[in-house]
Amino acid sequence: MTTNTPHGARIAEPADLRLAYPEKRIVLAHGVWDGLHPGHIAHLEQAKAMGDYLVVSVTADKFVRKGPGRPVFSLEHRVHMLQALSCVDLVLVSHADDARSVIATVKPDIYAKGADYQVGHDGDGSAFQLELAILRSNTGEVRFTNGVTGSSSALLNQLTLFPDATTRYLADVRQFCYERDCDIDQCIDQLGGLDVLLIGDNIMDQYVTVQALTMSPRASHPAYRHLGTATYPGGVRAVANHLDTFVNEVTIITSDSYILKTRYVLPDGAKQFGVQTFPDCKIEDPGLQRERILDAARNVDIVMVLDYGHGFVPSQFINEMSQPDSKYAGLYYAVNCQTNSANYGLNLATRKYKRSDYLCLDEPELSLALSRPIDAITLGPELNTEIFASTLMVTRGAAGSAFITQNGVEYTPALALKVLDRVGAGDALFAITSPLLALGFPPFLVGFLGNLMAAIQCGIVANSRPVTKAELKRAARCILAGL
Image 1 (cartoon, helix red, strand yellow):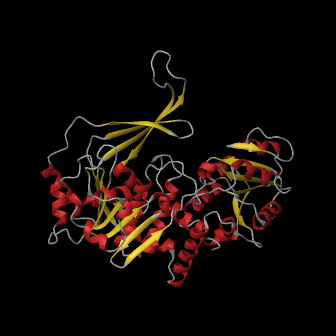
Image 2 (cartoon, rainbow, N blue to C red):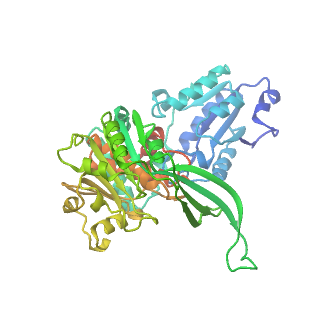
Image 3 (cartoon, helix red, strand yellow):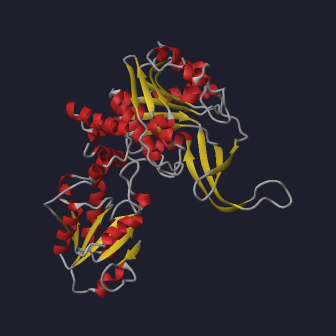
């Protein structure tokens, strides 16, 4: 936590406030403050009137959870705008996605929140309730401001963060929900009753950060200085982490050993090269593996296969699930069949999966599966017959995605404004679209939430953390505000 004081004596640490001002009632206001507007100013002026000394904490860029492209204003600019207000006595920077650590440190007499927090502004209310628990343990109280309100998200959306076509699409999503009395929060909450079986390769993503040096004087190869190493769960475990806050229970079937995918990156995130390390041990007997998978499938609602082409998913299981008269045919069966540098041209969905309820591919994977250039492929319902899937999702990078069913094609634009890392974006999309489709939600809505989930993931390095239910809900509210 860092401190900036626009007025009065400089405080060494927030905890020193009580010593510096023992007789003053300290008020805390916390937020992102992305695009200061009249509603913010009215809120802060009312907060100051509740006590004697107003502390404002502002969320650091890394911890803002308002969807793609946020914050619009950098931390430096947001702090500067707050410091310019005469009602603000102290500005703190919070390196967390809620105010708990600030409350525990400052121990305010009063925690000032907007009136919308009285009606569950933060989605399921969990973060706010945790903040209140810490506040009350330090004898503080919460008070709500009133009067002029406003939304930074609504204001920023009207300033067209997105291209015009995307802005019109988002307005259509809002209208779609309004006309059908469709509450996105409630739609997402319905996933909470599902039990999911995940099957796929066990992968770990390792990021080695290096600094480029000059060419080696004794050999013609580049040289790098090692700065640090971080390892994150990939593959099926990354998808399980995403699903954890959305569904009731996730069962994972994968190998004990894992494939290590190491990427060497510069401090700015630019990837230099990669090395893949495969385990020496063989995968267990395919027949036993099939029995283990099918036994687990008896107790779930959805079977999700993440086939990265490294040999884990047994053909006996695939064949069983492909039979129209299989006793498992009633389960919702979602497949993500991926192409990568280790299996290029070998892991083709059309050769392996002869039936699925939902198949998710990117454009190169679709091109390889159909053995023709992507330019020669017309996206339409006839494709579903060729690829043996009731519903086909084609991810198209910067062009967004396309949902193809027997009723036609639903196109969804890309929603990522800032791309920090593309690793894991497709997995995040598959994680949320599979259970939504299993419950019968319309492709138009599923495409929106899938691309939004992927856009949030694009702002995260690898799979260093999952996208949570609360984060997706909040991002949906923010991105549709004011449209």
